[in-house]
Length: 351
Ligand SMILES: *[C@@H]1O[C@H](CO)[C@@H](O)[C@H](O)[C@H]1NC(C)=O
Ligand SMILES: *[C@@H]1O[C@H](CO)[C@@H](O)[C@H](O)[C@H]1NC(C)=O
Image 1 (spheres, protein in one colour):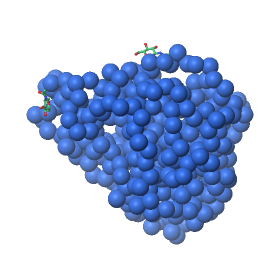
Image 2 (image 1 turned 90 degrees about the vertical axis):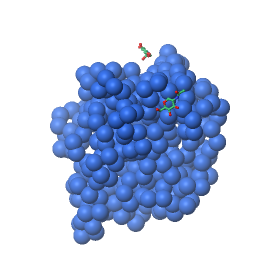
Image 3 (image 1 turned 180 degrees about the horizontal axis):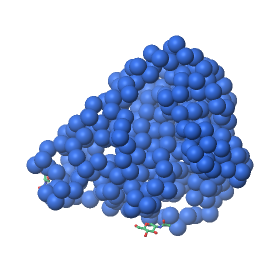
């Protein structure tokens, strides 16, 4: 389905809120404030968008993104959250690597790399968006997916992480759990949907996942009920990350054994290790206000800023290393470690 048609339909079917917006790249750096707070460098390279207060240590006791950011790379002017995923690399036949750049979705031309973010009350194609949700609270953070997943069975524990092989920029189906094994003419889109049921108490948990859960039966899309342990229905947060793989779509460059050449910054060439990270940082109750509005995509209570303003917000890289943006690099940054210190440091996580 093409977004142009969704957006025009939206105009005639006003209801509760679904927001979809672009965010430019804030920085690409080997930092991981959730899994390795304070560590410079962290295990593997990430691409990060959102508020410019992004730093290696963002524990809620010492860090408030909405108060500390002075700009954001996201279209909503009140959103100082940080959103990130691992970076993607192309591995050449000779074993060297180049980073695969990101590109904006249709309708967000001019945005510098980055990704597209959604907050939904009901499934994407439901123009009514009437189901009630509670917005995330200050201090809230979460992760979905696991970099150590190397099999489909492990990846299936996270039902809504997937890939779309873009034939053109409007392709949305089918979705795959692993990296596509053939050329994708318009790029590879990574779809990251977070769980939607909150335990209503903890802003975080030691694995950054246990405070959230999937519906007890059915899905978010079918409005399946939340489990008793996690009764609060939250917005579905979703990322679309589009990698510009076209420059590498040359049979002379692809592996000769029929495998595919893309590999995550943590060394995963299957794609099963797909994961996304989120630190909430909307100003005051701006997200709840939007979620309570009757709107679809064009939500008037969402204050927006220009693409120029989004693109002019950035932070310098802290880890001084070659990341394969110019020349080829002989190894992934940090040698593509999955977790280095998942020997989780006990930290205060209750905000
Ligand atoms: C490795 O392969 C890439 C892509 O084919 C090529 O551009 C690069 O020059 C090669 N590097 C070396 C050291 O052979
Ligand atoms: C860290 O990654 C290694 C694989 O590199 C894996 O064997 C190990 O179980 C992981 N540790 C944790 C705590 O996930």
